[in-house]
Each structure stands twice: as C-alpha cells, then as structure tokens.
Length: 227
Length: 249
Image (cartoon, rainbow over all chains, first blue to last red; front, side, top):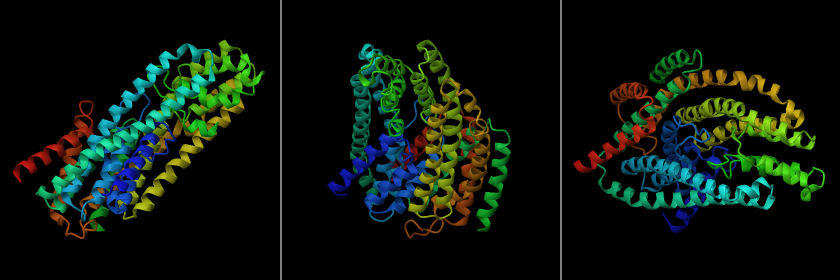
C-alpha cells in the first residue's frame, strides 16, 4: 500500500465517518458500502464487497438510534476492505485481520462519537446564553465546529485503525495457519449467526414476522441446496 | 433549508441533542420575519428554536417546517414552545420504528441478497444506496412540505399510513428477505466455488456442518439477548479463534 493509497483511505474514512451522523446520513457508512470503497481503492472491489458483506451481517444488529451508544461502522469498514484487498491475492490471514480490525475499530469509533458528543455538549453549555439570545454567529459557529470536529474524528480514527491493522495483517500473512476456505467458513458461521439472530430479534414486535422468517428460511435452505 | 436539513445532526450533543441543528436548519426561513436578519423577532425565534430538541433526524423535517411556519404566522411564543415540546416524542418514536428498525434493516438485507445471489460490487452498493435513499430523501422532503403547509396543525400528518403501518409491512418483508437469503449469504461468504481466490472452497459436508453451526450459534445469541450484543460476541469468538490459532502455529 503506497502513501497515496493510505491518504485516500484516510480521506474516504473521514467522509464515511462523517456520513454516520453528521452529513448526509445517506448510509455511505454502512459496511457493505464503506468496505467496498476501501477495497476498490486498494485494488479489488470484489474483496472489498466480501469484507463489507461479512461486516454488514454484524452491523444488522446495531440500530443507530439517537442517544444510544452504537458502533461506528464506516471508518473501520473502509480500512477492513482496504487491507483485505491490498493483500497479495485473497489471503486467509488478511481476511481474519480485516474482520477483527473492522469490528474492533467500529467499537473504537462508537467510543469516539460519544467523546465528540460530550465535547459538543461542553461547547453548547458554555454558549448557552448567547444561543438563547438568538445570536446567529454563535449558533452557526457551534454547528460548523461540530461538523468539522466530526470530519476530523473520522480521519483520525481511520488513520489510527489503518496504522494498527497493517502490521497485524503483515504478521498474519506470514503465520496464519488456516486455509482461505476454512477461515472463510469460520467467519461465515459467526457473521451469519449474528445476522440471523438480529433479524429474529428486530422483528419480534411485528405480528407474523417470525413465522414468515421461518418459512422463508426453510425455502431458502431448500433452494440453496437445489441451486 | 433542504441542504441544511441533511446536516441537522452536525452538532449533536448530550446537552441540547439536535436543538442547535434545528435552529441552524430553520434560520433561512426566519430571515423572512419582520425586520429581517437584524430584527428582534428573528433573534427571539432563532434563540427559541435552538434550544433542546430530540427527534428522529429525518422526521425532524416535519418539526422544522411546522415551527418555521408558526413563527412566520406570528403564533405566540408560549404556544410554539408547547408545540415544540409535544412534537419531540412522536417524531422520535415514529422515525425510529420506521427508519432505524424497519427501512434500514430491510435495505441492508436487500443489499446482502444482491451480494448473495452473485451481483458484483457496483450493483450491490448502488442498489443499496439507491433503494435506501429514495425512502430517506422522500421522508425528509415530505416532512418539510407537510410541516410548512400545515404549521401547528401538522399533527394529523403523523397519522400517515406510511408512518403508522409502514413498520409492519416493511418488517414482514425484511423477515421474508432475511430468511430467504441467509443460507445464500452463508454460502457466498464461505465461498464454495472459490470465486474469491480461485481456491477450492470447503466441500458440501463442511458447508452442511457450517449451517448447523450457524443455527446453534444463532440460537445461543438469541438466548443471550440483553446480556451481550451479537456483534460483540462475534468479535470475542473470532478473537479467541485468532489467538488460539496464532499460539498453535
């Protein structure tokens, strides 16, 4: 990975991190989008989308509801897709590191969002009186400062995750003992189990959703064996 | 206003939540108040609208439209503030149910279906973004329009069938898509054709064992609901696997 590639990855990580909450919430930050972008930058959108689909299975469970704490998938997924795609051919060590780094990075990203929100709150508290008086410059200043801080947060987070993941990936390239097929199988079991439990839990309050899911699952299993 | 609406959560914080974003987004409309940008009415309205507010970011468009209209119609500050407080809860719960708990998981599962059925990266990503954002942008624009049109009489709009029954229909559709494609997602990730690397994938017996593993792990995660989130459990399981494998190699 060249320095230019790394720089582009950090910039894209910043943009998708920014999309998570601040602007425009178009779901560029979903793993299936962000990891594919990361993979495309590093040379293989196909491996990027593989990483993105795995991470999307994990992300299905987390809902970005207002003040709740949730992982920030975007920046971490860009790095995950990029380090998998950047490895020489499709490599089992790169796959496991890409997934682990992206999951851990998403956790770190969630923490960084909480910190940023606390920082924004301190700023808002200091300016409370000016805001109540309707001073436009203060209100605009608070808002723009929040936007810029979030963009910088995404960039810094992506840079940190990338810096941690490259040596880990290189170590895994040398020493990971399992084949690509076996590693992909283990990752698939974990990811799809999380996705299946997420779908089951999400729609528990929707009448008929669970019977529909079970019937569709039986149909899907039958079709998958036939095809 | 529409562009500002897309950045409504730019200064999200634990003090005023999206309050500053409401004021920031509504500001262009408030310039139409008597006296313009330098008038007392403008400053008072801006100060009022930038206080604490909580709602789903997409449905906050309804509040912005309605409250801007109320300010321009000269409604009393007490009435505006009362209405503003009353809007928070329904706009939050309706939006969370419709968008975060229904539309987003549905679109996500459709994207995974594209992937599982062999679509390329471009089709998978573009299909997801297009589908999700048609609903996303429609909701924001519709909200702003009905809020602006109805002002403080916007409450009946919250009974829109999409807001009320949408989560049920979308939830059922998502459950159907999810059930149908989960086996295909598993097979595509586990890669029986070796498409990712040109390598031989695991044989059918291993895939069958893997599917049983998925079922058992999913049941365990459902049993553990409320104690640990699935993605964290997955992270821990894969980390332990990586650690164990590294120590053995």
